[in-house]
Length: 382
Image (cartoon, rainbow, N blue to C red; front, top):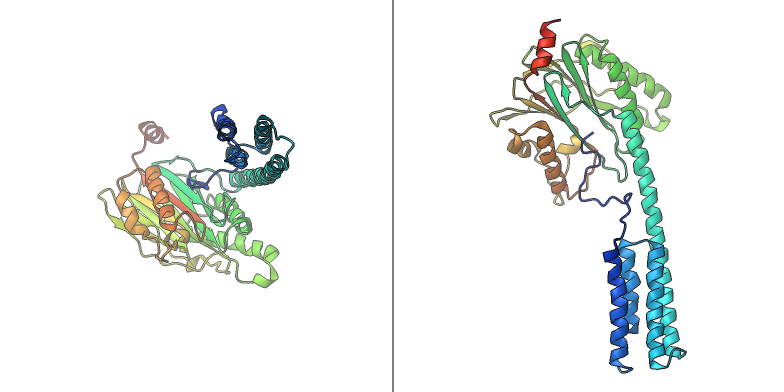
């Protein structure tokens, strides 16, 4: 899955930085230079306390043991200066050596805490990535005549997925796709997301129409919430969803919205269109009659790109509180393939928000391309 926790500006604490020999030379050289300068300047100028800079600098790129070793070298440098001056046992030299030892010890402790936090973050990220593979299956890059690309950005720090979801599958000579948004965000919303994804993967092959598919998903959500919805949140747990069906042999896209925002339609001639949908209530509120779900139909021809999204995109704000101008920005990249299109949108969205998202973000780009010749031949022989 492309773009999961893809904020490039974040430092990956789970990947420890192994110091090179060249970096380790820097604090060693500092100790030699400061010790030599302190000896050369005589007792009038005292430079020994500057030796504490060496372990402080080492902690920036190395672990606690390496930092402690550099601290010992700094103490040895101060002792060497006292020995050269014939005052190694004097009170001043002893105090300076002890001061370097105390400060180095504090730095080593902080360094150890930092590394422990990095290991914890690595474990959290590992669990999140495993959950991602189980809950959110990677989408294929190609689904019949459609090219797919997706991006997921979790708002919760350290999480790879949250309450947003998407899925795609082949049903005969058509593709069915879903994008949804669980009320809430982060890890607590993963249960509802997993339930809906599993229900969609099964019901998408059994229901003849999108309204019947929506009603089937509603029944699954109702059963789940009856068993697991907290008492204090009765009626407050729901999922907005957009169901999409694209047939191979029709230049159309059919959509049924369950309280979900409308997608963007990008044309090959740099046009952009936001369709007007007729949404039904979100999933989980008890609307199980297919007649309550409307199918909206829109042209979707060769070269068109449909961008499904969650409200984390259109509700993202900058530091001044201005919403992200999604349609306006996406119009700049209508002639790009879906993977590149979403990369541009992702970078632009993170730049707009300063890398801090208030809600999870999911993007799914669907581009209608030519059917490969080998695939078209195989279909014609059926």
